[in-house]
Length: 277
Image 1 (tube, one colour):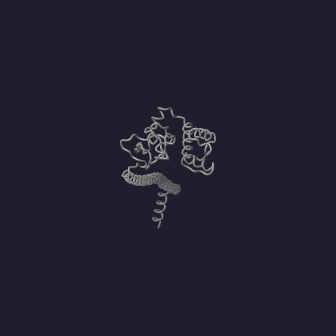
Image 2 (cartoon, one colour):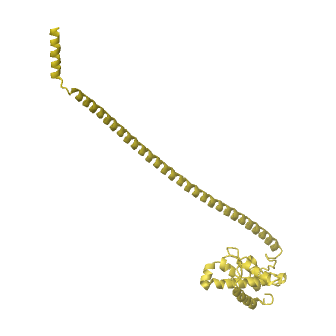
Image 3 (cartoon, helix red, strand yellow):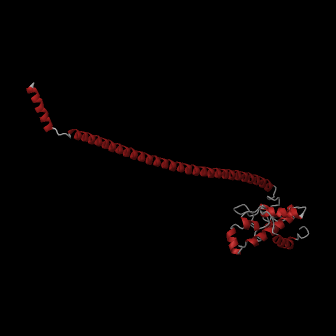
């Protein structure tokens, strides 16, 4: 027992000399440092994970924004292409309508022309021209008919009445007569073959050669011509009806009073239309 007790005391002394009294504190501090290192490592990993996730989210948002911008651009291009296609379709539709109208007008003109040719052929077998005036080959032409396109003697006239010279546009040439003011202004004449005035082949060259560039003078000439035509061809019951007919011939809404007075004076001097107007 004494030997065992002595060994125990020696072991206790030896342990006391080998392990200092603050060993437990050091162990605790080491444990705390390990825990702190573990927390810091975990916090760094979490921060890195969050930063990576944030970067991925930003990249995803940028890709989505680019996709939206591309989709918007594509939609705008499609809308513009659709608008252009609609505009082209409208233009094509208008061209088709215009072409159909031109074809109808050409067909009507051809039909009228064929009827006129047929009637002219029938009249020619009777020795008459298209205005039912006598054709007398070998006889001098009727001067009044050549200038005016009509003859007051009718079938009793002893002179020849050849068909009127026509322009490429189908309007009569009256060499020696005043030019048709309607034709000079607009390039067309509503009176057609019944017009008593000349229709030059090249209107621009004629206007340049005769210095007819003043539109007011052309309007006055057209109104004077309309008065002459109205005085010879219409039967207006009132002055208002005559003015309406003149406005329709000129293609205007209303007549200029001063120009109308000048034209009436000119037409009165030329045709003696004063009492009627």
